[in-house]
Length: 332
Image (cartoon, rainbow, N blue to C red; front, side, top):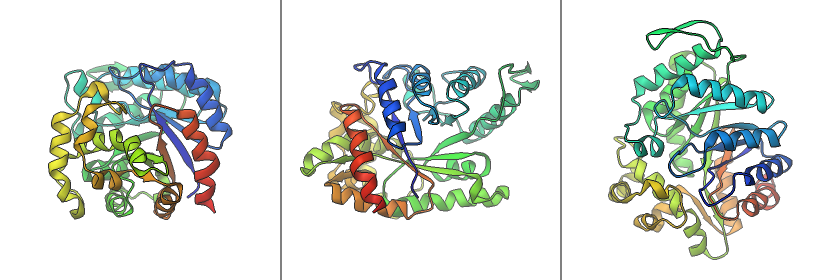
């Protein structure tokens, strides 16, 4: 595995124009994909950010990681993604999920598995550009030119199976832990098998968060907000690897204390509710040697790309560190 991507959201405190410089530099450094977070209450507009990245690059894959079926009508999302595809020279990706921060923040509830399955089918139909019977009427997306690849943000068994059955890619969320990822991959395989699909038909993109520093406590602080967001989503899980059952009290605490307006913020007060042990399990934090060793274990898994979540604060510096120091050491 030697394919690398980046994921980010544009915080209210940073200029959107920064995306242009960062995307161009990332492509020059060899990153092949950039994902942008869709959270309308806590971050700047995802489509503005994605379009800027597309205009600043030539071959970079650009997509939402992830949007949902609720805060925007699927016809609006499809049309906006087609525009992104044009601006990115045919390199758009549609990242879809059940919905969490964006949906809860707007007073909604995440999509059920059946609703997501139907939504994937609807996007496929819209991308044909042909007249379709959808939403109780006849619709035709005049701008459609091709089937834009659909990625599903997945972590739990049902979503993992659905992704294996129907999607072009998986945005694999959860933990930068080999045993955890292996547990998830088995459910993706079940979905592929049920649909009679080959593993090569699915791009598996593992999202990890990493902070490199000789001061372990400082490194831990850099990824704690991400770890807390993951803990909050784990609270509703019915099934998880046995080794993670011990963290359930932390998941409940994170879920009850999480403030959506501070989603992924390094300054959020709620980030202190999870233990160091959980942070070390879900993210990569420590010296360069430690992080490289962990990444090598992940690269040995059956995944196609590793995407690094770039949290706010020194994004360019972190991206350059990844490209110039960490990734070459992993390759070595």
